[in-house]
Length: 257
Image 1 (cartoon, rainbow, N blue to C red):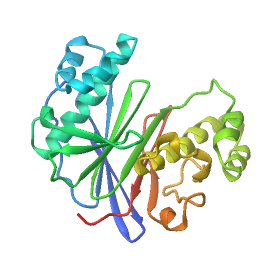
Image 2: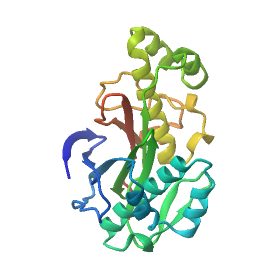
Image 3: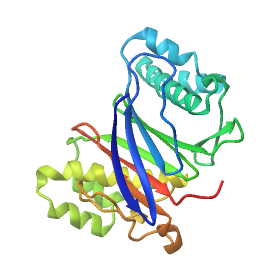
Image 4: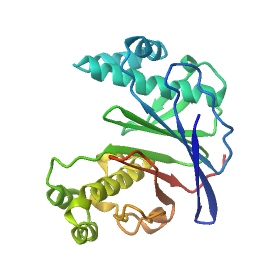
């Protein structure tokens, strides 16, 4: 288990972000203690070996298996099994129960939460792209994560015109063209993380959430687009990810258990 710490002062709260690599071979994950100001971010890569996938598949519930087989291609079914298998593995380890005992509820827009066991303060969110998985776990606060593989096979400003605010588009235009794709995905993941934390998904227009575009900014403030009280609840932080990816985590203020 490899970790790197990033500590930021966020709205009178000290958040401690810790990033970990999920073990390569299936086993019950060894997880560190999770304190009230900790945010644990787990990264993993979909394995290529069928026996490993089979072990993750064995952890899934009947409804998850039903969802898995709806995918047309085997590689997408394997990715689903791995993503949801490691989620169960991690949550089972934090809760000290069998991964197969976990049950989930889903919000109107599909955000999962733990229903069994009923008495838990753990909140989580997950995202995956191009074989890479990100799981965020914390206590007593809403959390959303998003990770995207940076691509250059589209017209950046054309897509930004549909989903970004005027200010965000202007920020992109000020960057040298070779830097725009990375900045675009950094901005996109920040927006997505907020909406996933809120439980809105893409039902809430992306151009009503405004974030900083600058890739190296340490703390990203939501500036406009949400109700003033709602805006103050959220903080968004970028994550350390491999070259070629962008990722962010959005966190609400801590609520009382």
